[in-house]
Length: 349
Image 1: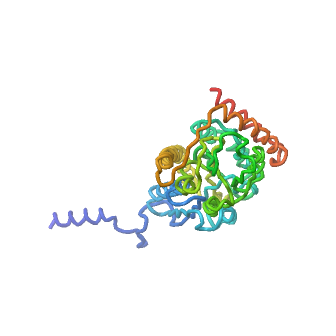
Image 2: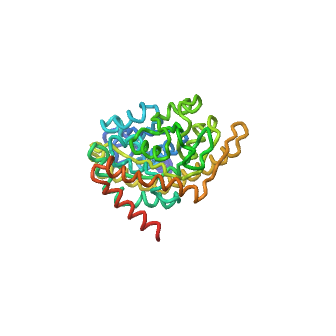
Image 3: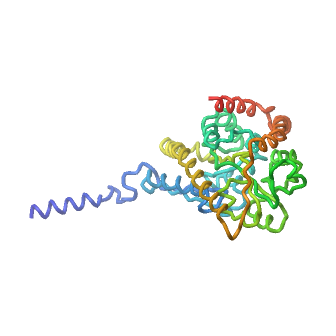
């Protein structure tokens, strides 16, 4: 009988029993059950979406399932502009946003649209985005003014051009209908090459490229391949003229209303993912470059610009920084001035 009682006691202990009030959910978790919406501008499998999935996975593990994070792919809650509004009004708690679509609301964020501002090295660019005071302190304040709190800035890789004709020198852009996301600085940047910039949501872009409404676009390699843009474009130019900068953002009122444990949970997880997402974007960009180069069904000529060719574009692009200072910035380009110095210091080490 003693053996039986001891065995029964061990079984009950293993099962965990229940709390005094009869509620056994989540054991001793310090977190209340809740659900957070996390919207992205990309689709399942693409970098932003898998970032949100990884965030959700880690939050679930750390809270023993008490907090559920629901990632939303592009279109799940509307267009890119709709998603910014939903973050502001608290419909969504978290979002990955890009400066191309938030740039008309947070004008200073258009700084990421400047061509040849960041170094050619994606790794060095990611390091600057992580550590820059101009970005992580001064620029963050501009987001906070509209109720959005950026927690991290990170790169999805170098930007490349796809086109229906070879792009090797600035004159190849003359009269070229180039798709842009919609910011004034992007428009100005392509006018420097005598292109014809055309604003278009990426949800319409495949069809736009297919029927010639636009002749080309820019994106990281993984996105070009996964969105199948190479199917309707004959050329891809490896230009690395820019980096696609993504921002992990949260609704300020929601974030500031979290208790200490919840806020620490969010901050800790975002910090952990900074290195993780760099490796993820690198993996995807490397793999999808092979997909494009090896495709027999959709052959795409890959053009790699030389340093001399890139210098031609850079010479025309640099005056756009004065446009940013005079026409875009709300404070005379102070953030850009500071960032340029930080980039110079980081690349001279």
